[in-house]
Length: 155
Image (cartoon, rainbow, N blue to C red):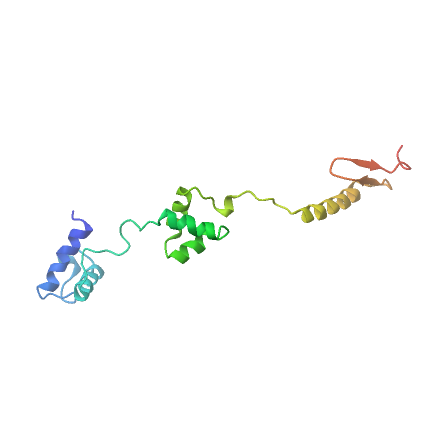
């Protein structure tokens, strides 16, 4: 069983001998018509038929450049940085982790702000007073743990 590179070298021979993709069938060469046509076009342009775009290790990002870029704008996302330096997002994120950086998504942040907590507390008090205050009994909740019952109706 031949490798993909060897198969392309075999296919590259017929166009140089005067056999063009229109004349040759894929079954005779053991390859699809698309592969034959691709090799023929590469030879016509002057490229190497063994070359396959997208194959091989992606170029890595230099750590020093990445560190300086993230120091300038620490709040920028990894996607934006990858777009700016024209690299894949996965390559930038791996290199960023190797430099010791952390993604902003993984930094723990408070779920609610102080203002939101105050508003939630007021709403919770109203809801609890409404639920617990039955039969004319008024229960006043001052915070999450303490409450007082109206002394007039307290038996």
